[in-house]
Length: 239
Length: 262
Image (cartoon, rainbow over all chains, first blue to last red; front, side, top):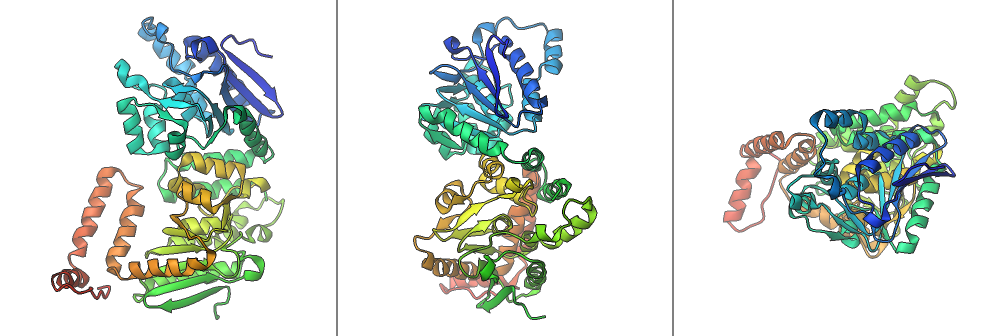
């Protein structure tokens, strides 16, 4: 059901699967992928038949090894860049999705790859996964939210170390610093993620949406306002 | 009205509170919630209490609440329901205590029971204790601070997993994620462990304990600059206390200090 070139989009049992599909290029994120991800995420966001979104990647070596550097020196003129910022804001779209998103991570999870993973709600990785933020070595900074999402997930100390040094970390270390929720053998990755997704899709969609909203929005508020948000949402759910 | 659903025991500046409906795993009912609210008010005003311990009678810490039973089902009565629901909010009462509160999680802490544990400052668990938010499995969300305090304590990723999956998890995972700071090897060691900790904390100057709690809790909601200002202000206020003078004297005379909370 998918006419995409560099991603796959499938639906099964209320689960929307988005698969990064440039395995020969370690699923490097390019402009085509940006446009297709934008369409697939928009579709999954609006599709009432989808309760949970799963983000995974094809091939053995990488979830996503970062941005496709071959496109880096073909920068669009400023007018086009501004237009893209409005019309193709994939990261803003990611964060606006109210459904739970689970990331299945393996191999290289670098640069844009780690930033995509950080936009998800629950992260499961296989034992071979490696995480890193290499931007500093290229004279740039993360541009897909990494400087904001990573410290909010792992805390300032580890985020600073990863961003400033560019050091890669293993799945075990990523689990220890709470960058990911679980580490499983490579063969178990998709089954474990699907099991989680199946458990979650059994619950009331509005309760899930409100629970996610209370946690995510609440963390941006002072505690007292967060508690008010939770109370308001909780009383909107029919008993 | 004598307290029956919450037992209170005061001993050497430590107030021990015990949720007391052991036959129903200490499920919160309206009477228990109202008793607890009153007890928390009294503790804040009682200068003789320096530290609070919270635990459950019997095998459970607290397995949840009977709140839902009290709400009108199926009808659109949001305002009325909200008023009733707020009366059940034991975690909100616990969070209003300005003194250090230690949770001795002796058994299951589920739903509102977990929210109560999260409202305490330090959590120590027995090995058989289980934790979880079953709320989304009933089409609900945690509503006594769980969606706010859990991510602030264990981080966003793990909090979303626990709340969105409604899974029950054990003491080992609670320790690994930082939900509890310690799990005792045997359940009968919990009381001694918690009492020892409470005694150690109660030996410190009571006003500085309150200020530390205030600095951390309020500071987390402020910008770094504002938080540092709050800390400095509280620090200089402590210089005006008699306990501060006693602390220095005791140090110079190489004896334990005798703090009076003044």
